[in-house]
Length: 112
Length: 113
Image (cartoon, rainbow over the protein chains, first blue to last red):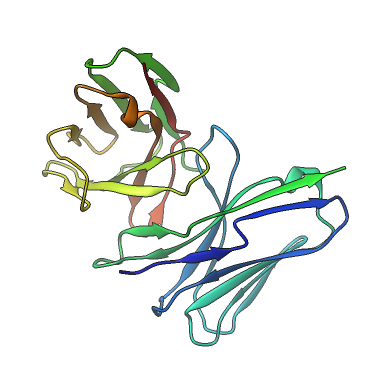
């Protein structure tokens, strides 16, 4: 079974703090994606990483794909209340690359 | 950008009734449609995959006779929850795919009393 385990499951921090969310698997992925989902809405794509060791930055968010392409991390600098939401990593498969399997999710709450 | 709509956005029904959820890709053609289910405080779980004009392929543990999927056109797919029960209460999200890009609908909240 191709599992994407995220940690932590839940994170409550104050505005201005930094945080890192991890997405780990025992399987190798050709690519990984990160999504953010707000309550009552569908997930929104933040980034896709495709190369082992790749680092991508999106304003205060930094995404990294592990060298072995089995893990990824999302680092948020100076978190803001608007960053609150469910963060999901996702990868293709199993069985067919057209499927997308989601990680277990990390719920982030940023308070003033 | 790609626009995906789902209707209804929320529905409350009595146990034993059937509920149909529509998913439309408004400005692109979805060759493949994925349906996900999300229970409170959990991640998205893939229920089934369908290609236009073909029968859906269901994930293990998902009853195909209970969750009827129709993907009759490249812009419309429906998910019908038949004889719904309280344990079917969930957030259902469609995800149409065009070429290598996958998009997500805004979701439908189903509550079965």
